[in-house]
Image 1 (cartoon, rainbow, N blue to C red):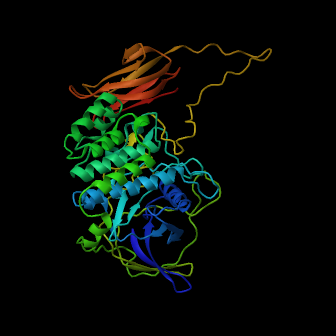
Image 2 (cartoon, rainbow, N blue to C red):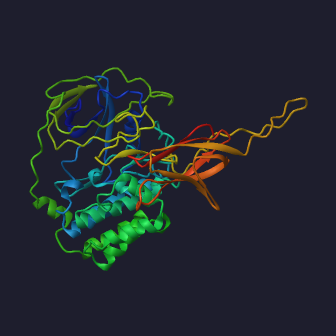
Image 3 (tube, rainbow, N blue to C red):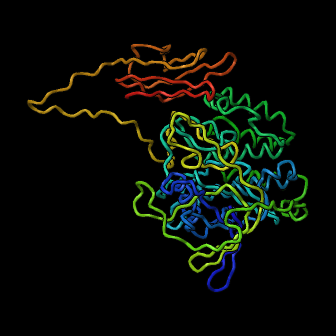
Length: 483
């Protein structure tokens, strides 16, 4: 990521940020499509906390997104530094942006119904004047716009320490998931610690499927917070396991504004004006001091129709460079520290690699998790069901297929010490088993004594049976085979 000056033909200059796709990214990949989606979604919204998008361009075969530049630091760098009044102002500003993204009408008069899905400290930026910006809509979903990128079946994308429990199940993502994540950010701002502490991702996933375990952990962590009754009430509401009981964004705005007005300490703008801001780190990039012109368009993304320019985030913020494209001048220079690269945890799907698929999510905790449910990019749309054989009406003189067997063999491929069962209401089948009734089950895998079982709901055992494989290192089980 670069800081740049955009010079218009009229001589007007704009201070901008340039997010550049890495050279090794396939221009047809889901990662490219995600950044295209980010630009298109943000271009349809207008709110002071939402990042403004100026253009999508191609430079030396690398796609780039041009946005406003925010001269400041991520919330991550300010945890423990913000006065309580300023903290609740930040929470209120972000909630206001999320409310607008979900409910504000856009150009055609309909609300976009946008869910961010990756609210976390590193995606909230505060400038030197106390203005707040919400960043990185690369994995956001919306109802009323077409998307290029589609999350692969069996994967969830996001940052597990900030993901609401329903994100790990078939219930998927809704606006309340963003409120949970914002509550986790507020907890971190108050305590200097993550809500999930040092819990491993598989442990978080296991708790997410058990409301009692989840709420017990949250209650224990909230005991660490020195807060007023009103602050604690809001935190409990935002962080509860049941998404239906969480306050919506509009209500969070109202409560956060009230908390800010009642809290002690400097206001956000005053604090930022008086704060000693660290000097930007000097990072040398491969475009430092160069002049570039926009090249031929990238190839069209796979299966998305007519080509539209697409973009992706680069991993570095800071080089100095001079860039010219389409008659516009670009001067790029140092800004702040590098943005951490994303991790990828998806051993069972080798074609998804870091930076080329859902793994291209900013933040050290951003991972791709093999999961049971589709993470549909349009949460309000019906989730596609697995393909099923249609029951064709028999025609005269036509052969009628014999009934398929109603049970199937389910094999098991696990390491020593891992116990697996298929569970549904009124039935529990220890594996392996040669006669599992066809139907939908939850995989229950116990990896170690004293650790909550991992549960994988929504697994279909079809007529052909299949094999369940479990990875003890990743706490992950998958069902493969004909369905």
